[in-house]
Image 1 (cartoon, rainbow, N blue to C red):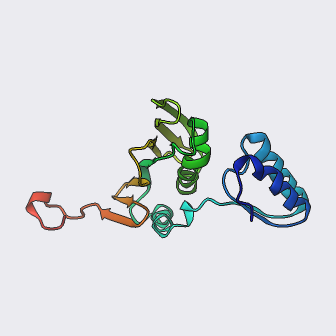
Image 2: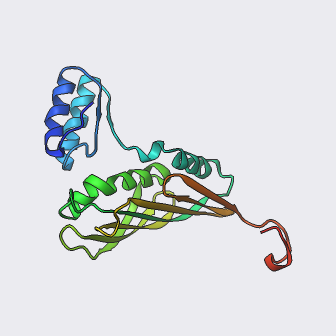
Image 3: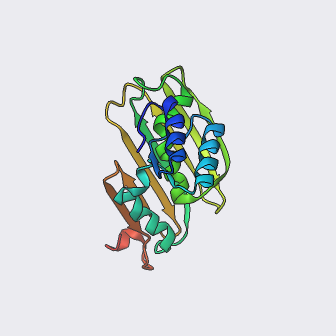
Length: 197
């Protein structure tokens, strides 16, 4: 297990791989593409497993959300809206550090839930360690959505929300411990004429 300062992790992981050990490493796998590829190539050549500590995909609320997406009980997932807010100012001094050290968990979660993104665009209102980003994404499977990232002292307690709209309902994961599932109405009467809603 390698949990160290990001700048030290690549060398430590490579040492473990050379020793023939499977490695569980904290994020990020490497500080850039070249470092991550070097680790991936070394692991493949040595025949060992390297796993990055992306924890969000193992949270029960997100595992259940993944079941809803894959199972189709609410129809196909069509869109999502995500928010991740944290006071990252003590350990992230710019947007690159914020994405690689904090928001990377939500980036991994989106890939886990929706697959690979094929289009990404966005806006930044960041200034130094004060992070404010709005990003729109389209995935290979047609799902579209947006994510709001913020890293400022206003968020002394980490906050995250993920709302997924399906063809026949929606699911809202709130603060990693609550999942609200709402199914579309099935009756013919108008909502104000029925207690079904």
